[in-house]
Image 1: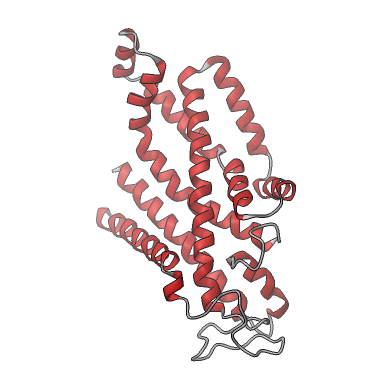
Image 2: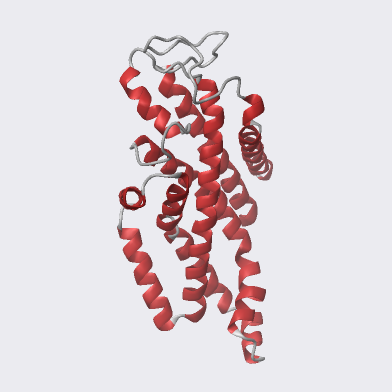
Length: 269
């Protein structure tokens, strides 16, 4: 069992590294400019061929190049949004679990209210107000995705606050800020890292959903979700236009999930 979980984590790490490498080397790996027409399609998608392994869309743009550059958008939004999610969630969870009382009540009731709202609908409303852009999308995703992190961090902080070394530090008059930074946060850091890996897959899916619904990163910037939305018209006649971006989303989500679950299993041993 241990070997299998180790292999699971290694597979996830390898997939994430390959995804990062593709995004970083997009100008080198991409055979064409993803925003320019490179084939004469006359308004119809081009089938996969030796010149265009994943075909071309109705505007003559190379699908392979758009998927490669789309990895940059997905990773940028996913990782940046997760960083914002962790910042908000960890801060609320630490304050709520450490101080308790009225602070805990107010922060957790606010968290419950956020949990009761559909994340996708809330994100769509925020993006509509802020206007679609790369910055607004990652900000909105981070703002609506922190609730689970806050609840888990609160539970871990409550458990940590009852430990003997914490009680001893309190008895010696340690300042609450020092207790949080020097004692609580380092001890709950492993679970935060695991949640970051698992949560990134969720932010990737949310970015793809927003792009699919037309409120994500605006065109002509390549986005996997928008590529699927644009391919719906040609679903019967050119299924590859939706298949390849869908597989890219599947690969990215699976990579972070494998990494996160592998880390979680290793931590549980």
